Length: 431
Ligand SMILES: Nc1ncnc2c1ncn2[C@@H]1O[C@H](COP(=O)(O)OP(=O)(O)OP(=O)(O)O)[C@@H](O)[C@H]1O
Ligand SMILES: [Mg+2]
Image (cartoon, rainbow, N blue to C red; front, side, top):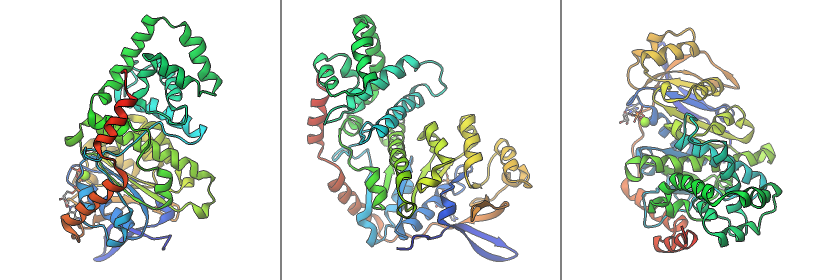
C-alpha cells in the first residue's frame, strides 16, 4: 500500500495554467483549518479529500453534524473498502452501538478519560466556567468515575449517580479499588458527609446525567459497558469510521455528547501511539465539521504536538466568533495549513493578519468555491495563494451501497435493541 500518498485540496490557477494543490502525508500531520460562510464549499473540500484517503487505503474518521457528508461518502465507497466502513448512526435505534467513555485498559488511560469526562461536563453544562460546575463537582465526579470503572465489568457514566443511592453497589465497586486516594474518598470524606449533603449532590448529578438517562436512544449507547469498536484497532486496521451526528434526529445536546466522547476516546488511543516505532505509526486522518461543538481544550492543545502521534486533523467552522478566544488563538497559531473562503468583515480583518500581505477585502468578495490558502509544504508554511475547490465527484453506488453498508455495520457492530435495553436497565436498576 502506498504510504505517502498525496491528496488534492483544490486547484490553483496561475497565468492561465491549472495545477492541483497537493497535500502530503508529513504536512498533513501538522493539521488543517478551514473557515468560510455557509454554502461556500467547505464540507465539499473535506468530502473530496476524505474520499481520496479512502481510495488510498487510509484510516479515517469523519464526524459530520449534518449527515450530508456521510451520505455523500457512503454513495462513493469503492468496493474494495466496503468492509472497512463502520457507520455509526446513533439515530438507528434498532441496533444501538455501544460507546462507553469510561472504558479503559491502562491506569494512564483511565486518568485521561476521567479528566476528559470532567471537561465534557464543563463543555456541555458550563462552557463559560461560571461556577455551575466547580471544583467540588469535579472532585466528586473524578472519584465516582474511577470507582464506577473499577472491577472486571467496568461501568458507564450513567451508573455514577447509583453510587450515591445504592449502598450495595457502592460497596461492591469499592471492593475493587486499589488507588489509595479514591479509597480515602469513600472511607474518609464520604463517610463523614451527611445524608442531606449527599442527596444534594445526588440531585446535582442527576440534573446533569438525567438528560442522558431519560433518553432511551442515548441510554442504549452510552450506557453499554463495552464499546462497539476501539479506536486502537480502528487506527491499527485503517478502518473508515463515519459518524452521522445529525442534530435533527438525536437532539443537539446528545449529538454534542457523542461527538465529545468519540474525540476523547480517539485521543486516548492516539496518545498511546507515542510508544510505537515511527515506522509502525502509519497516519490516521480525522475530519470534524463544526468542530467547535465536539472538542475539548485538551484536543486543541493536542494540535500543537500530535505530529508525533501520526494524527492528521482537518477541522472547519463558519466564523471565528463561534470559537472561544483561547481556542481561536490556538487553532490559528498551531495549524500548518489554513484555508479561508469568503468571510465577513470581522473575520476578514483577523485573517488578513495571518495571510499577509492580503487585505481584508480580499476575503470578503471571494466567489463561491474560491479560497485563499497557506499550505504546509515540506514542513514550512507557504505564502498565501488562491485556489478553487474541486467539484464533487459523481456517485458510483447510489443508495444501494449505502443500504449495504448500513446492514453490514449494524450486524458487525450493533446489538439488537431488546438485548441492549435489558442489559442497560439491569445495570441502572435502583436509579
Ligand atoms: N467546487 C465546487 N463546484 C461545484 N459545486 C460545488 C463545489 N463546491 C461545493 N459545491 C456545491 O455547493 C454546495 C455547498 O457546498 P458545501 O456544502 O460544501 O458548503 P459549506 O461551506 O460546507 O456550507 P455550510 O457552512 O452551510 O455547511 C453543495 O451543494 C456542493 O455540492
Ligand atoms: Mg458544510
